[in-house]
Amino acid sequence: MRKLTELTNEGDARQMVDALLVAGIDSEVRTREPWEVWVLDDDDLARARQVAGQFTPGAAGSEVARAAAAIREQRARRQSRAGRRMVQVADQWRDGPAQGIGPVTLFLVIGSVLVALYSDFGDPLTMTIQNLSIEPWDSPEFLGKVRDGEVWRLVTPMLIHFGPLHLVFNMMWTWQLGRQVEQHHGSLALIGLVLLSEVPGGLGQYLVTGPNFGGMSGVVYGLFGFVWMQARYAPRRGYHLDERSAVLMMLWFVACGTGLLGHVANVGHAGGLIAGLLAGVPVYVGHLRDRIDAPEFTAGTWASEHIRGARRVVRQFVTPYVPLWFLLIAAGVLLFER
Image (cartoon, rainbow, N blue to C red):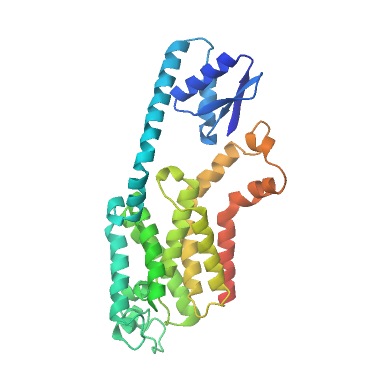
């Protein structure tokens, strides 16, 4: 929320709010004389200044007032219908086909389930595991099978899962996150993100621990990093990931990285997270550019006048750079695993 201007007449301030609304900009009148007009969305500030520069009190006031009233009435009708649609929207979020489950997400889930069943949930004695691992577990040659042409081994370890809980956890997040990427960016983008998350992290894991690893976790953290960036810094694209889920994912990431949970493919996790965050860099750069163009804590902003103390420090110096903190955590896990 940013202060746009102030006027000495309340009627003029209300007219400006109507003119801004007709231009597609939400604003409101705050305080008493002088009457301040505040723009609700910081991204609209530059355009609001253009509207304010062309604003003449009293000019076409009744026409603008009628148009603004019609917009408010239309919004009120939509809001009344929104309550009736809440159950339907919740069902669409829960049920994949209603939201548009894509073929790549479906393949990842079905493929992982079938491999889990055929391999008795990751039994290394089965040919399924040995054929899908980056290398047979007893192979003394570095990437021998891959260099012989079996390049699929760079990707297929993600389909291997060691136990039902491992499978259920990864499939739940693959379902929730993968279908969002496929719905909003398309199947090819999801394929690219899966490869970017799996291949470098898998190679790194192989270098550190050898071929005895598997699971969709690296891909899941790649999807998490990308979806989190989109939901946080480009919310209009339609991505959704609540803060509680993000915190839980990062707490689990750190817990695995400590080594207290046993043998975990932490390099794969970290590689996937880094890949997902890097794939989301464009929207983050756009966010930082907007902050530079319209700083939150400058004279006249709502934040500078109402946010104080530790909350201001966090809001000004920590929150804007959370992706960098995530990258540092992932880098710390990689260094710990070396």
